[in-house]
Length: 274
Image (cartoon, rainbow, N blue to C red):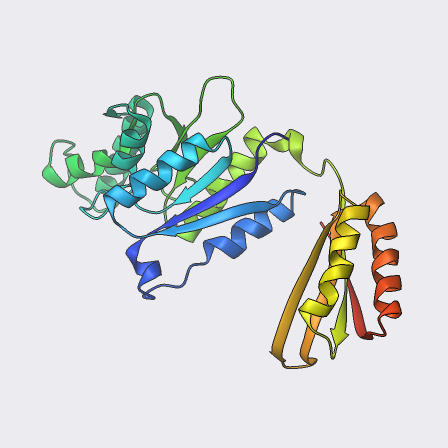
């Protein structure tokens, strides 16, 4: 797999604390369920210039990026226009999105017992939610049928996928993207993470062991997670190795051997697969 997965969460409400972001944890879960992992994430407020710069980097990254928020039709929704600017293309009303949004307008009118008036000002405003960068493709929205969109270079597996900020819409849309376009990458290689709680030690004392493990096992990542106030273990370090399952076992044995050699006091072990 020549690309990684990234996430961009857009919205002042996240940065101000008015709303707590739920996307990061859920996207990690959606990827993990499919044997994939998230490589990076960014949070961006509703500043058009900063959004454009962030999206320009995303398009140039060669990664598969999910972008949530800012694709509504109110004045603080800049994402659609910023995506067009980042790509250097015009923003145009997508014909398929127009059909879907118009169907939504017709359905709402019927449900409310009102006449169908597509030229009414509020309905024309709704159509703006179908204005995407030229050349974009739609992402179906099972919640209310107002689509998201994605932009991808011809023939490339990399793309940036734009979905609403509402979790009830965004998460099924992200799952659809993964299942539709990236199923051939699911569970390509089993991965394992094996770690142990180390008491009464310091990161600096464990660093030579970590460096030696990375030299001797280049396909394995070594990680060190210190904690000062854990409710069960108190002050400790979780030290471990992670990577392809078939390569983790020898690195884990080497880690344990090194910890015993330095006289480390060890606690519970943890194994995670994904």
